[in-house]
Length: 409
Image (cartoon, rainbow, N blue to C red; front, side, top):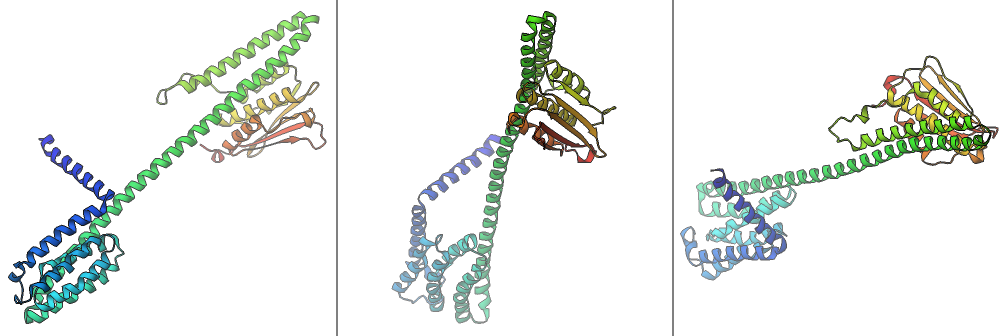
């Protein structure tokens, strides 16, 4: 039964869609066919049927034909210029009523009235009724006497209903258009959000890959250089360097596997790699020790106990110190040293990393510094970097708020 009831509806929708497509492609064809149909009906009535309702059946046939054509031919332009069409039909309607012909073709004025209500501002309806009412009043008052209202009121009500129908169709069309436009805008916003999310994710992955690979490779390079010089004089220290290289390499591989595991896990499935603990403030000592083994003397001033921070903020502090020391390893030159200071202020954690490298060899505005600033901004933090005032080194300063309500989710 469902198939039987929906098939006609589907067929009707398809037919309506095809008619609308033809009308949109060739509006002149549709307007011409309808005008021809109404003109034919008006002329058929002018052949003699008009006398059935006329108050004066003795009017000449030529006048009736002329009035019928005047009330039907202008309909060709009813959609483009409905107000003009109604103004052209109004004199013929007035002559029809005043002469007593009372032609049925006068009701064709309802078509341009419908299009005025459908496509024009509401105030245009006042002008439309100013053209429709006088002919009806003239005919009622002249030929019906005291019963003029029986002729005028039904016709005016018919015109009012037509105008209301046009307003209703217009409201529904505008509502549908607004829904379509809203759906289109939502689709555009969804696509933009997807692109922004993808860009943010690419930036996050780039930061993680840069921090993991850049730091560990810098440490491995330092250890390899030191082991090469130590191999000739102290095989034992060269073996220690190789052990440190192996340890650092394994740590780098573990972090890469964790990151790749997060990327490869389905969105709706928990990942084992995602549950792997991220570096925290407790891991600063092993980080500093690894840098020292790579050949960079690092002095550290860490508060005891370490201040409490959300895991994400602790990771930011860790990565900033890691990247700063990595830049020192790569750019500060031989004989440089570094100092790491972590201090707890009343409402923030202050981190300062200073090295004794020359400013000309200091890091530029590359991926590392950009990534550090982005990490700090995620937790309302600020990061500044630049040469020391006396030109004897480079300094990175990080401030991370510790007040819980200042942290972003």
